Each structure stands twice: as structure tokens, then as C-alpha cells.
Image 1: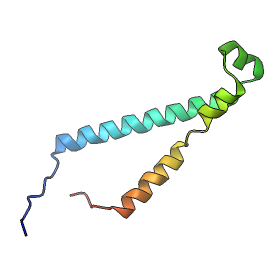
Image 2: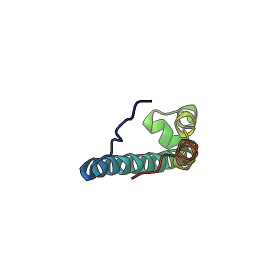
Image 3: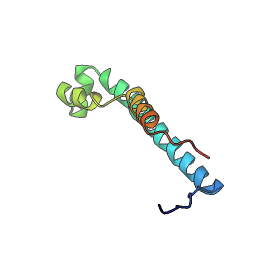
Length: 84
């Protein structure tokens, strides 16, 4: 058996990862809010934007942030590797 050195991220790498993760979550939240507002548009507003009800239904059918978080959380528990 060959021994392997454990690669540990430095403080700067952790900070960059955390900032990237937070940026991604904030983008998901913003898109989720935009989809909620899009779903509330009336027929005339949809027409003014050149969107059909089917267009909006398709856009709003994407998984919600909560669903994504639950999926990631389930995956992390299944493959959990404690952070140093």
C-alpha cells in the first residue's frame, strides 16, 4: 500500500471557495425570486414581454433552491469527508 500525503487547503483557498459558494447561492436566490415574480405576471404583461404561459411555466419548473440544497446535503451525507 502506498501512503498518500493529505492535501489540505490553505486559509486563502478556503476563503475563495467560501466566497464562490456564497456567490452561487446568492445567484440562485435571485433567480428564484425572479421566477416567482415571473409566475405572477398577468396575460397582458406576458404579451408585452413576448412570453407565453408555456414559456413561463417552463422557466418556473426549474428546481427551487431548497430542492437543490436538500440534494446537495443528501449527497454530502452520503460521501461525507470531514473538513480539517
